[in-house]
Amino acid sequence: MPSYGPCFFCGRRNPQGIKLEVFAEGEEVWAEFQLSETFTGYEGRIHGGMLAGVLDEVMWWAVAWRTGRACLTVEMTVRYKKPTPVKRRYRARARAVEVSSKIAMAEGEIEDLTEGKVCSTAKGRYYLLSGRSNQEALALLDYTACSPAVRARFLQEVEEPTTEAH
Image 1 (spheres, rainbow, N blue to C red):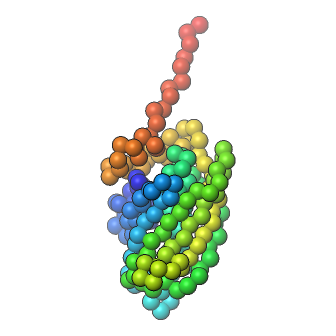
Image 2 (cartoon, rainbow, N blue to C red):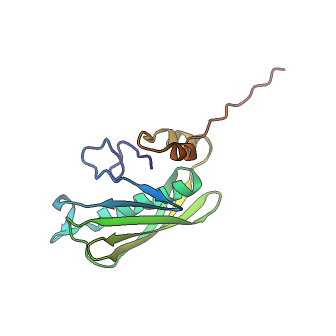
């Protein structure tokens, strides 16, 4: 998947970011990650805000992948099911579950790859950008590591308005 350079979660150019690499398989997107003590919330556990951010990131990409459109997070709920120790590998995955012309719903989860158990789940609602706003947002993404198929899904020709001579 593409990334947005300055983004804290997916940006490859953000020196403080976690640089999630997001992948798509069918209609699902996923990313594996491991966080250091820098992201501790309490006693060797990842801060819940970081987990919420990772879930928001993969749900955003799930919506973008399914619709080919950029979006804005409207609301999100997270359920923390078990502690998430730092220094372990996790997989975040998400999928868009409902899409209308303006709003998409997504669901996501984070799984502890050491124990094979789901640590956190989330549901989110996303406002789909359209027209020029969508084109401008998608044009800001970094597609250098993407396949031609991924580029084609997001980068569509901008139709120039025609002017008729009278």
